[in-house]
Length: 381
Image (cartoon, rainbow, N blue to C red; front, side, top):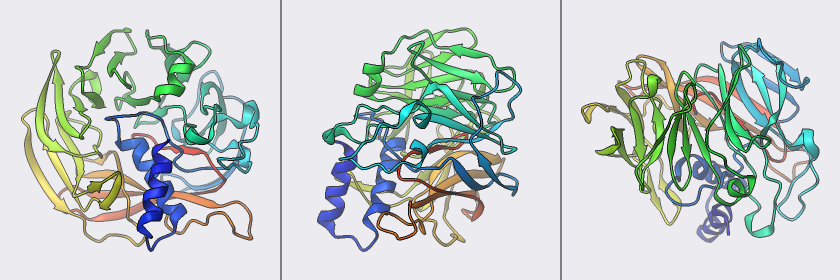
């Protein structure tokens, strides 16, 4: 039985005063990002369609139709990536044949270009009633948008593609599709896209320039990697943070399931604080942001959320927008779900900036789309 189904049953038993579908989607998304300690099946998070209306970074609004496959080189930095099953209706009991193109990641650039990525596995189609949410194969985008990491089914390896020069670097490890479906996998990129962290039953870090593989000690998994491959922040099955160096892990005596990228100086980590979870259900969500010097383990600041925008509720944390602000994302609360007369559900994401010194939150951009199922990936998340 999947965590998603567990979440649904727990929600139903508690008779919440919010829309069940909304909480289920949020729960699945949180498990996808936060629970590395036990199973690693990637869960469906949100969805997007082949025709997408997006407020892009910088405020430009565009409507992009899906174009051909990603060009060999000369591609602008990525704004986000998604798959949407071509908008086909999807239910646990009715999994249609989505076809090749409908089960491919699509990459949207910062200037509005939209391209298929046929080389990147996006969807596990091995759907069964007891494991119907195991659909999203891993993909991640470097925070500068210039490199994309994914699983290449053809090579049975993980790949990092440079969008500018088109070069594709393959990890040394061979991983079968069967292993991917059984165990799941999460990928982490350093901000510059050179170092790739593999989060599985056995975690490791790969220098994609040289092919060197560094194994992470048993019980710990890569969460964030600094430029140049250091520092390396790891977590255990209880979300306790540690610093990996010279083959050993030094505990940092802090705990969080939402950890930012490392700052430009390679020392400062931000994480969200205040969440409480009981029996896989969030009973209290994050309400503060903490900064930590990972080289010394010293807490630098802690600020409770202030000026919280309407609709902001279940944040995830990404990279640094400036020396004082970190980017957060959240599922839009005003989405519609099945049973509506206007057709497909409208889902969405919003991004926010939070000041690590004051806790002030301000809205940045909003992403809305119509689809029944799929996944959305933002740079640095």
